[in-house]
Image (cartoon, rainbow, N blue to C red; front, side, top):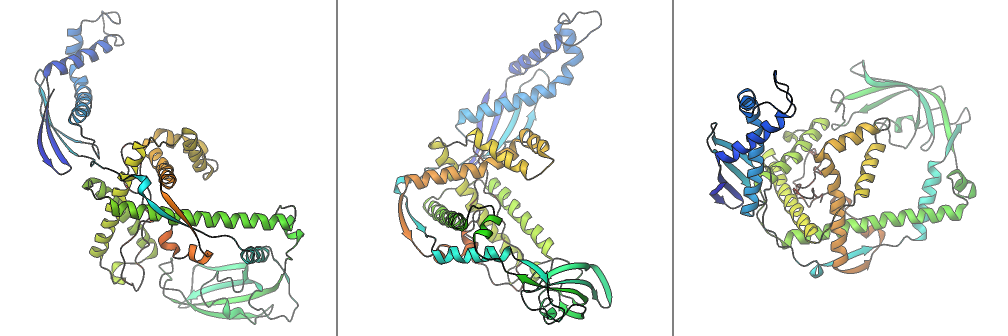
Length: 477
């Protein structure tokens, strides 16, 4: 096999590959020999048909398979010999081939960059931590008791107040016509729950059982239903029953209702859960600091095709969000071109960090044990009751899906490794400080360029995964 590099521009490479006719002939003969043991030809026992006869009958039908296998095998060997790691599947263009002649083809690839990660031991991190105080536990306990409250029938003359519930029938109309989804019977609504359109619950305050109330509201501009968004509506409401909340005492009885032995055990469980939440927030903040420092400390070219793929995944999510919300770029101060530039920067960062974390993981022999991957598949299956076997089959038969499932597990292990190796300073802060700015600190979010204010937010920033490395999968920022 002859390999000649014809283009080398940054990470882009092209090669001219020539596979000798003798090698093609060898593969053809091997295929024909395999056929001879299975094919039935009149006048010949299996395995006894002459190769010349088999060649005459079957060479044309097996040649495509031979060429495909030859290209796959020779291209992989060529890249190995050239010391190039492809970022994506190579593009192959057959330039010349006839029976009995050499096979000539052009191979175009984008290579993965050479990455030299910094020493993890030189990484300095601050781990912000918060302890759970007694007031927080008691507040959570009170809210938990509030969630367990029940409603009982109010006295006949009782006027509904915030915190009470009403059982109602209602019919919503726009321009005098009832609209789909705007009617219900025997609906129990807790006043102050803000579960209905803004202003609806307020207009039922003071109503008594048997009252009929006309409720006038305006659907928000961003309301999901496009046929009612931004429109004025009138609801004819019949109050069939007013109910008052029956308080639940914070005592051993509440604990028993929630499956705990006593109130002390319930308090302990609440404290543990809040502490887990704090620890999770602390890790998110630390992970973000790691990613920011890695991004700032490592500059290298990234394959354009990987950035394109990542950008398209992000942009597709944005368009879907906008379609669901009914927003458009006309409603925003940011133009679509400006948004595309912004999200392409995000895609570039994600690809860079994905490749960098993958390199760190490979150099330090970090792997995701099979049992952890199996647990992840089981978790996916549990989310689809009755379809567990289909979920198992999907991941077993879809390597890309399995790779995407593995990616966040792998990322967590690389992050854990970096934390373990880094110089970490603990800093105790208040819970408010730990939990501040939750949108930026959210797991899976990359740092995003500042966005102009909008009349209507055009779309939430996508939490698309970072570029997937060929060997380990991807990372989520």
